[in-house]
Amino acid sequence: MPGGCSRGPAAGDGRLRLARLALVLLGWVSSSSLTSSAPSTSSTSFLASAVSAQPPLPGQCPQLCECSEAARTVKCVNRNLTEVPADLPPYVRNLFLTGNQLAVLPAGAFARRPPLAELAALNLSGSRLQEVRAGAFEHLPSLRQLDLSHNPLAHLSPFTFSGSNASFSAPSPLVELMLNHVVPPEDHRQNRSFEGMVAASLRAGHALRGLQRLELASNHFLFLPRDVLAHLPGLRHLDLRNNSLVSLTYVSFRNLTHLQSLHLEDNALKVLHNGTLAELQSLPHVRVFLDNNPWVCDCHMVDMVAWLKETEVVQGKARLACAFPEKMRNRALLELNSSHLECDPILPPSLQTSYVFLGIVLALIGAIFLLVLYLNRKGIKKWMHNIRDACRDHMEGYHYRYEINADPRLTNLSSNSDV
Ligand SMILES: *[C@@H]1O[C@H](CO)[C@@H](O)[C@H](O)[C@H]1NC(C)=O
Ligand SMILES: *[C@@H]1O[C@H](CO)[C@@H](O)[C@H](O)[C@H]1NC(C)=O
Ligand SMILES: *[C@@H]1O[C@H](CO)[C@@H](O)[C@H](O)[C@H]1NC(C)=O
Ligand SMILES: *[C@@H]1O[C@H](CO)[C@@H](O)[C@H](O)[C@H]1NC(C)=O
Ligand SMILES: *[C@@H]1O[C@H](CO)[C@@H](O)[C@H](O)[C@H]1NC(C)=O
Ligand SMILES: *[C@@H]1O[C@H](CO)[C@@H](O)[C@H](O)[C@H]1NC(C)=O
Ligand SMILES: *[C@@H]1O[C@H](CO)[C@@H](O)[C@H](O)[C@H]1NC(C)=O
Ligand SMILES: *[C@@H]1O[C@H](CO)[C@@H](O)[C@H](O)[C@H]1NC(C)=O
Image (tube, rainbow, N blue to C red; front, side, top):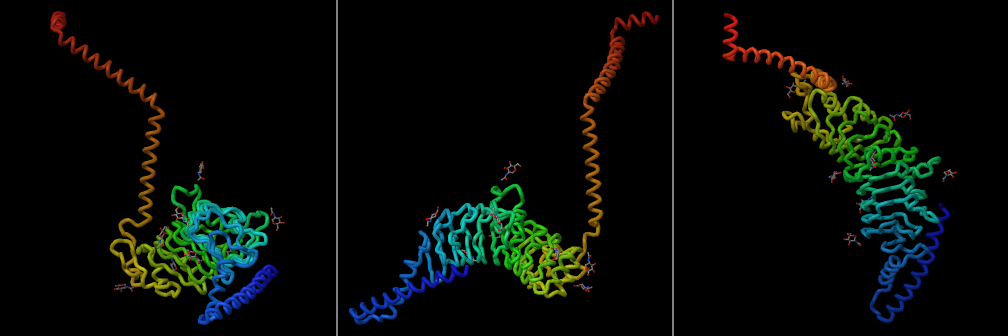
């Protein structure tokens, strides 16, 4: 890697010096003929245009891209590219491939010969990526920052960051990973959970143990898979804002001893429980952001309110306010005390659950009764027939007697016989 680096720039410098000499000569010729223009300014502007229009080195600039060797930057922005250009110059350190139509990023999409040994920042934001395959970022030994935000990632391989060699996974050099708003539209999602898919890629092979910044904002996350954070021990910044997290009860922050900022704004958090409060309190450097969550101010909020009053961990804690119940709406959490925080006394939760249980039992009994009726439908039919027949016999007997009684002849007969 060092050999590759030192040769490129050195050769470039040589050519630059030659170019500058030529331009200075040219400027001198033109200034001497026109007499008025200043040679120094004209030569520098010439030089700038020469560098951007015609990059030196075998690393030519790919079509539809802009290259600056001086800034070590290649930009292929808003070009509707459908694949990663093959002829990226080897000096590239910052690569922008935003606003394209890449759709699929295959294995080794950036593997080149010689490798792009200097590529440190890769921005693939908003390029309509739907699938990132195993080892898509392999052979990029210096890649520190990767932005995959604003792509509808329906298929993210678990081996995206760990590499496709299942028997050997090298640690990833990534330090910053942006995965904001990568949730695909509802109908493009796989059967498995989106949270699970992202988590699998973050965990695989412990490859991201050097990661310091992880952004997962605006992804509709309903939960944070339990063991994701355990595989990211180096995290300093975790951004989970604008998701749909309801609870942090099953998440552990305990091992994130380097964590400095934790963004949880704009989620659906109702309360933080003792376990989470203790873990956050135990992290030495952390600042937690909790604005715009629908806090529920009932008896379960007592511990969190007590903690908030003491802690320095939460930024802007005075802004946190209740969303429920109705009578508590917009009350600041910090101004509550336990006398405000009650659960409905008429139906305490335990009783509520017992009523629910009773309802379920009754429904079950009803269902079983109906099932028994259904299974015995033949017997019941027979039974009904028997009853009907019995009734009919009885009724016919009655009818018969009635008819006998009603028939004047028979009446006479009977009366006669009586007589
Ligand atoms: C990219 O595609 C869009 C729509 O398909 C079009 O409006 C736009 O002009 C294209 N841009 C380029 C640079 O071709
Ligand atoms: C990547 O590019 C997008 C679009 O230009 C930009 O908004 C974003 O900030 C860039 N990401 C990084 C890490 O600079
Ligand atoms: C996987 O990596 C190991 C160790 O670097 C190497 O020996 C092996 O050949 C690799 N396998 C493949 C399929 O690349
Ligand atoms: C979802 O599961 C069904 C059946 O298990 C399968 O046929 C279908 O292809 C799956 N869809 C996706 C997007 O994986
Ligand atoms: C929040 O997330 C949703 C969906 O993920 C997105 O449409 C919206 O723009 C995001 N809002 C902000 C302020 O980022
Ligand atoms: C924290 O780290 C310790 C040792 O490194 C490990 O044994 C433990 O399982 C980790 N706990 C969690 C919740 O990740
Ligand atoms: C939470 O912790 C506080 C103080 O450590 C304790 O008084 C309280 O009973 C705990 N709450 C629960 C629900 O365990
Ligand atoms: C709780 O607040 C009410 C009014 O805000 C106050 O009268 C009461 O003394 C407080 N109770 C405690 C224990 O601080």
